[in-house]
Each structure stands twice: as C-alpha cells, then as structure tokens.
Length: 328
Ligand code: HEM
Ligand SMILES: *[C@@H]1O[C@H](CO)[C@@H](O)[C@H](O)[C@H]1NC(C)=O
Ligand SMILES: *[C@@H]1O[C@H](CO)[C@@H](O)[C@H](O)[C@H]1NC(C)=O
Image 1 (cartoon, rainbow, N blue to C red):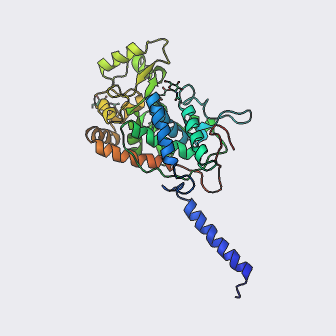
Image 2 (cartoon, protein in one colour; image 1 turned 30 degrees about the horizontal axis):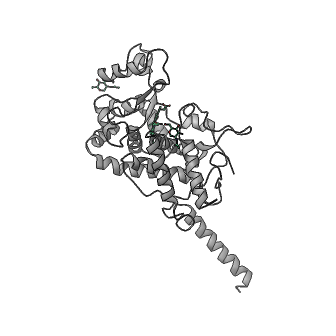
Image 3 (cartoon, protein in one colour; image 1 turned 90 degrees about the vertical axis):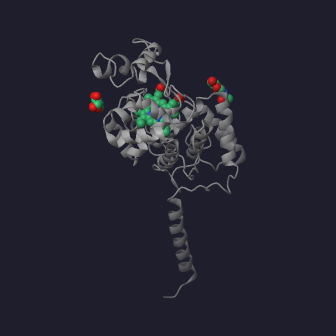
C-alpha cells in the first residue's frame, strides 16, 4: 500500500489520539507544572491564612472534598449553586446547614485565577486544599494527583442516596463506600478525618435519649461522655449546638479519634460502629490505628488518593470553571 500524505497524517493523528486517551486516563502529580507552576504555593498560602483565621475551616474543607467525591465523582459538583434550571447539591439533606468553606474555595480560586487564568479546575483546587487542611492540622502530607475537570451538572438525588448518614450501621457504611469503589479499610481510615471538626446535636442526639426508639441512651456510649454530651444537647431544642468530633484533641490531626472509640467515646453512631459492632474487620483496624500513628498517617494518605480517584472528569469532558459556583 502506498502511503500518501493524507493517510500518513491520519495515521499520525490516530496515534496522537490513542496516546492522548492513555495519558488522559490517569491523574498526575505534575499536571499543572508548566501551566500553573505556583499552584501548590497559592493554595497552601491561602489555606494557611484561612486556618489561622478559623481553625475549624480545615475540617470543613476536608469534608467538602468527601462530599464532592461521593456524588458523581470528584468533579466540584458540590460547589455549584442552585439555578432556576438546576438544583445543586447544597440543599440535599446531608449538606444543608452543614457544609461550610465555600467562600474559602472562592478565595483560593480567585488567587489561582490571578496567576493562571482559565487553567486550574475547581475539583483540583478542592483536592489540594483538603490535603493542605490535613497538613495544617498536623497530619500527613501526600502528593495530590491532578488533572480533574469540573462538572457541568450536579445531582441532589445522588447526594441524598450516596452520602453516608451518621445513623448508618456498619453494613450500610461499608456498602456506601464499596459503591464508590472504596474498601472497608478506606472506610475506617477516612473516618479518621473525624479527628478534627464539629458536629451539630441533631446528627447524634438520638444516641443520647432515644437510641433506636428504645427510649434509652446508646449502650455503646461511655457514661461520663454521655452526660457531657447531654449537657451540650438538651432533649428538646439545641439541635444546632455543636460538639467536638474528637473531644480530646479537637483540632489536631492525630489518632485520638480511634482511642476514643476504644473507650466508647465516639460521637456519631457511624463512628462507634467501627469498633462496637463486633465486626473484627473494622475493629482490628481501629485498634491498630489507636496504637500506631505512622500506620494511620500512611494509610490516610493512600485512602485520600483513592477517594480522589473516584470518577474524575478528564480530557474533553467537563470544563474549567471561572467561578466554582457556576457552570461554565
Ligand atoms: C463514614 C461515614 C461518615 C459519616 C456518616 C459522616 C458524617 C458526618 C456528620 C454527620 C458530620 C457533622 C455534620 C453536621 O454537624 O452538620 C460530619 C463532620 C465531618 N466529617 Fe464526616 N462523615 C463520614 C465520613 C467522613 C469522611 C470520609 C471525611 C473526610 C475524609 C469526613 C470529614 C468530616 C469532617 C472533617 C467533619 C467536621 C466538619 C466541620 O467541622 O465543619 N467525614 N461527618
Ligand atoms: C474568618 O472566620 C470567620 C468565622 O470565625 C468567618 O466568618 C470569616 O469569613 C473568616 N474570614 C476569612 C477572610 O476567611
Ligand atoms: C458486642 O460484643 C459485646 C461483648 O460480647 C456485647 O456486650 C455487645 O452487646 C455487642 N455489640 C453488638 C452491637 O452486638
């Protein structure tokens, strides 16, 4: 067969396409190396200011990333505001009056746009900011994989169905993680994020007064801890009062969350379940993290990368938003 110019061009084009498809299938650490070399410094610097202003914001940003990744993948869908034609995820029950930190993401995005306009996705900014949230809270660091694009849609129904509830039992938690391709170990490890941050009384109050409709407190809760929580959360009213997820070291990213579980001082039912449900596949991991912070740090980094790999939009799908709240 004679190879003329046009068929040669087509051949080369096909080669390039195939190569593109391969390189686009994977997120990479150096995705913005030439297009936005200062990206990591801009995100870290802005997060540093935000955490100095308010310690809790680290926890809030980390949670935003989790609530993004579990709904259509890590595509910044959680950041979209409602429009007349598209209901966003912010009003879904697990998110409403609960998610925080959107304004900090806006500030990071504005700072990034000032240096590298139109290049960096909101999904990647959220991935970097949550790593920095962990580091700034004294936890482990890791290399964040990048190259995600931003969604053109949001899903309020997936936000309702995919996100775990604080009242979920262990089997439900395991199923909801497995639905995202995440393992039992990822579940126990990522729950360790509850070593920082706060929760509203409404998310655990049933445990204090009427666990499972029994009219009694949860029997897997330490008595002194129960009384402390009852003083924060009265049986009627006070639903938006706040309690520490890790009452020992509430803003340090350490293993006290797991130690608390050993002593029946987990705040949410979903926390205590990891140790008290008598499923050794999770309780042995809880015990090992309680004793071995290195292991927890190592595995937390690995599990965050796994969560960050859930269904990213890449290549020609999705977009790079100008404003993280608006599809563009
Ligand atoms: C295992 C299933 C999980 C359940 C049922 C759950 C549930 C909750 C609930 C109910 C709150 C309090 C929300 C409120 O007061 O409105 C909360 C807070 C938080 N969650 Fe989770 N969570 C889970 C896993 C995770 C994961 C995987 C991460 C991150 C890797 C995470 C990070 C956080 C953080 C940092 C906070 C505190 C946020 C703040 O102070 O603003 N959670 N979680
Ligand atoms: C600082 O923190 C307060 C809450 O403590 C918040 O209302 C305010 O927006 C924050 N400012 C900045 C610049 O992050
Ligand atoms: C777990 O086992 C302990 C000790 O055998 C028992 O007291 C407790 O009720 C069990 N918890 C559950 C949720 O089955």
